Image 1 (tube, rainbow, N blue to C red):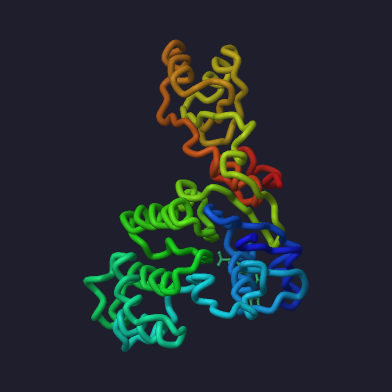
Image 2 (image 1 turned 90 degrees about the vertical axis):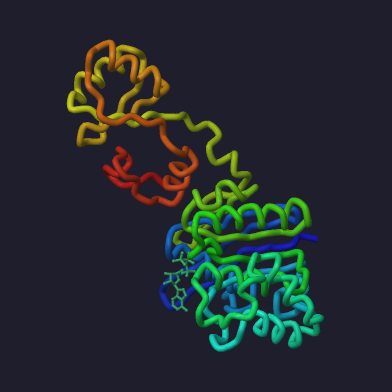
Length: 309
Ligand SMILES: Nc1ncnc2c1ncn2[C@@H]1O[C@H](COP(=O)(O)OP(=O)(O)OP(=O)(O)O)[C@@H](O)[C@H]1O
């Protein structure tokens, strides 16, 4: 059975089509990144999956059923939506124990889950004193209580420091690849999840614009080099003589297609052109993501005349 399935899901708020005919599935044993810019419709989709928002049409299913029909929801799906809805006066351990009792789970699960997310030392501290990162970890601990095999996480990296983000990456991969869970994790920053996810689903203005394995995002895309010089015309001509295609982005910046960084540097050296910056594009993935979502890209020719869709 498919762990998470959306079929032609639509939801509007007044005139705003927050989610517009979105369909995708997440299978057990995989991590899927649900990506899109702010306001794209990610949270609304996840809230439909968790029965917190009623869809206008279509279906949002967990283990083949709408969330509201799950008999033991905490044991079927672990969710982290926002890290703010904890009773501030309770300790982390008590918070989780209350949840265990309400869900008919042994209270011993509270300490086990705190250990899994690295919060054992803070178990007796009141949640009011928790940092955003600690709240995110506590949210994850709550999601783990019922040993679910489906996880739905809305921007879980928010508030985590670099070490926390590193830990989260490993943890989500462990849940999927070693424990066979289906993990759906949203983010508006591709780089935050690109080391974690197997598949990506990209949404922009409520519409699904791409879905598939992460690697497919970059398939067929050529690498390019960004170079800055005070002598842009001279360098562009020299690079074109060497077979490159060159786009001028203003401020002395050139985007060079068809040559690698070393060759661009050598051409500049041979013609004695001083360059002040040179870099292979950091992540072709990021470029693909920005193009698909229609987001503007710094310094790129795509900004002129609107970004491609
Ligand atoms: N309860 C609501 N009432 C009215 N409009 C809403 C409501 N919830 C979401 N929206 C609108 O629906 C659109 C999608 O919002 P949503 O929060 O789902 O996007 P998102 O991709 O999660 O964005 P972010 O990354 O900023 O969290 C936005 O235009 C938002 O303003």
